[in-house]
Image 1 (cartoon, helix red, strand yellow):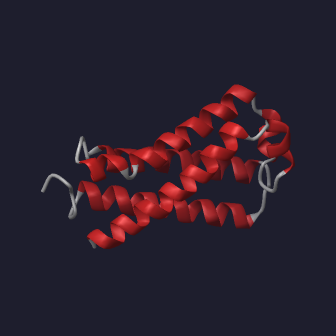
Image 2 (tube, one colour):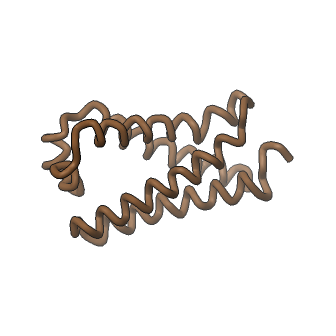
Image 3 (cartoon, rainbow, N blue to C red):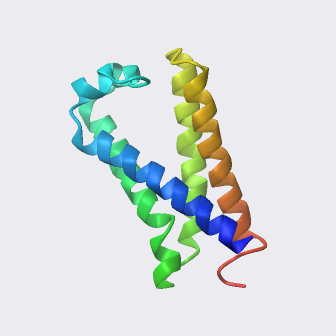
Amino acid sequence: MNLALWIAAGLLAVVALAGGISKTFVPKEKLDKAAGGGWTADASVGFVKTLGVLELLAAVGLILPAVVDIAPVLVPVTAVCWVLLMVGAIITHVRYRDGTKFVVVTSIYLALAVFIAWGRFGPESFTA
């Protein structure tokens, strides 16, 4: 179970890192033309960049606290925050009619985050 939680956290951290880098450093106009990025046309540059920074922080928060053993409770807290972010992403993809593919993929990310939060708050807690 511990290994599965580490793998899930690693996968989710990679997803968060990729999304964070693109939203933080790719111009909004270019994101708007990408598949699933149509929502950025209606969002401010600051909002898109803020989401990018939050995703970068999530990538760090899913791994680093446990690795350095400093406040490892931040791992499941980050996972819960990721769940909230993914709920918003699902709503956005549905609202912009981006297609079932984006909703399914985002739902998988949400499920991984729920698994991490459940596992690290519960049976495989770092404090146990």
